[in-house]
Amino acid sequence: MKLNKIRFNFFFHGFFLILFLLIFGCVNNQSNASIKPNIILIIGDDHGYPYFGFMGSKYVKTPNLDTLAHSGVLFKNGFVPDNHCRPALQSLITGMLPHNFNRKRDSIKQVKKEDDSILKMSQKLKEKWGENFNYHALKYFQTMPGELSKLGYNSFQSGKWWEFHYEYGGFTDGMTTGWRRETHNGRNWFQQFMGGEGTDIGRISNKPIFDFIDKNKSDPFFIWYAPQLPHYPFDAPEKYRQLYSKTGFSKSAIEYYANCTWFDDSVGELVSYLKRKNLFENTLFIYVNDNGWEQEPHQEFFDDPMRSHNGGDKGKLSVFDQSYKTPIIFSWKNKIYPDIKDNSLIHSADIPATILDFAGSNKSKMNHGVSFKDVIEGKVQEHRNIIIGNSNKIRDNQDPMGRDVETYWGRDKKWFYKSNLTDQTNALYNIIDDPFCTNNVIKNNPDIVQKFANRIFQRYQKLTF
Image: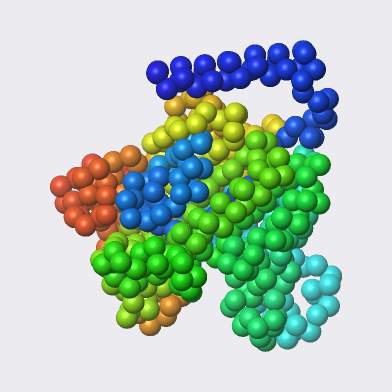
């Protein structure tokens, strides 16, 4: 009640201040389009939830993200739908869960096979078309940038982007413009596949984004800011390594934390540019990560590439709470009340619907995702009491891309449950007492297990857990 009263007072007084300025002519007459917020979605790459100052870390330095978190609403219980980046990013751009995305993709593929242009192909070309379809499928989907364009937004893609071309995501501009199988511009196929020139953002320069901002500062804009950080390679400039060099931390921890601070500095540079251009106060910032990571100060993974490149035993391509958990921030100066920490469960798929709501769309949903604007404004307490997910890949010592499995998981405010149907294993962890999932208490809690199994069955129609 006290929190809602604070929020109410903030918006109440803010409303009358704006009304006063309008009446006395202190606010320029602007079109509806010009008063829409600029929107920047900041996406961390392999940034585990414990490794931020604002999440309580006393050893990882993230001052710019700390400031952003304290300037708005911090959701401490955010979750992504999968344990690796591509399906998580597909969900973030469409609001769809990965299994729904894949089903729709396969359905579209079946329809497209009947197009005259495909039917006229030779068998060899048909096979090649089929093999490549998944790389090009996103262009047939409804996307958040596409919806924003209907509201008058120009949009820019930068950073990690697996979907071949920025236009496929509905962006009006961007850095990723396709790839070739052979090495191109010094990048092998996989580097191109991840985003090509787009992955230079943050690591090399933010200039492409600054140029886009300068060209579009008179109109509302949306920016997908997804630097490949703190993702491998762990090659932060020496000044960031020096911050951790005398701590006694493991080598792999020093390298990872240096990349975390490098990423933080890139965010700070972007925020500073908006302030210099007088665009900061009308910009909505959102932060989310793509998947989890594990790197405690004295864990040494340096001589174990499988673990160092995937985040210990509980990072990506694993199935633990830490594999999916992410902080989610919404910050907009004078529009979102500052320094609020919210423990509501929120899905990263909710971000597109929330962004569209703030942009003035009348859509409160976008596929699986629902708008959390009313939660951010303190009008309701929460929308979700449980998060249900599945993953089709887990860690494998023989293949860095993981092996195929059928596994499901669920999370409420107290419990994390997982069931691996392929390996016939399951586990339950009390997150309040055991946040790092070290003590499997499944035998003592059959009712809790049944609750999760029922919810998973409802969504995925699986018969045995």
